[in-house]
Image (cartoon, rainbow, N blue to C red; front, side, top):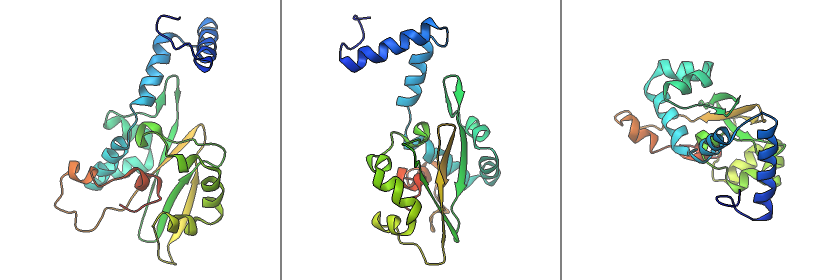
Length: 195
């Protein structure tokens, strides 16, 4: 244990918990390493790839909106974290509806598609206010929407995650899929910015 694990108090406590799970037959070191690897490999570039494909491939877009978990597999992506697969729902922004994500209980978030969650996403202020006054919160992020745009707030959970499919920017008809992916930001995937 001391050969390749940190000796900090928290690391020792985590390793004890890991050992208890392994001893109970619930997991093993390889599976734990795989889960950690998946978490650390998360990037907004993954979500951007999904969005760009949806923008250029209408059939993929329909599959993504109908069953995001299956559609992710087409791109070699997954919402699986070890033995548990989280349900992903992709919500589409339209000219009349804008979607924004929050986890009101903690900070549940699709790390594999959006990368590590930003500190503001985890803050109590964001979690409470975006539900009560989403238009004001989005304006603080610099996103002012027309008064007749409906704002839908999606609350994530431990079992279910969401990702926003932003509207494709005007004037991008000639761009290749990789160029489109470069336009997509983490904030656009959360819904606190337009793309």
